[in-house]
Image (cartoon, rainbow, N blue to C red; front, side, top):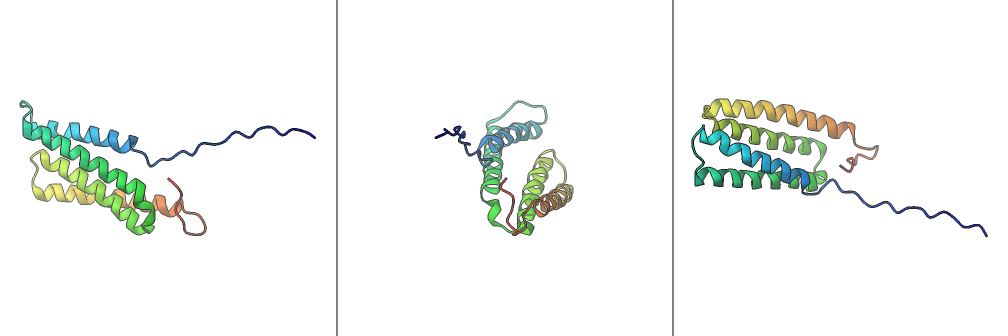
Length: 134
């Protein structure tokens, strides 16, 4: 009887880990106080602003990547658009810009990100309507 070659076992690879959300959160949290301090010394308020911003951005991205697949593609695209728009609008408001320009920039970025995310989800689902596992 001939022996069969052993088939290597593929390890499951998940893209839903904490590496990308944590990296994005840290970078966002480092950038927010730099904008808010405007060249002065770092204060405790700016430290907490950066820390809380980092946690909120990281948890938001983790939640969208981990649990976003249960949403229909339209709502999933809108959720990514809202996430991007809020994040950019908040950073722009820290620079001292008016609330109207911050909201306008957030809406523009959110519409572009939401439309792009919807296009990605629409073009990458299989024939049964299920999203691709990413």
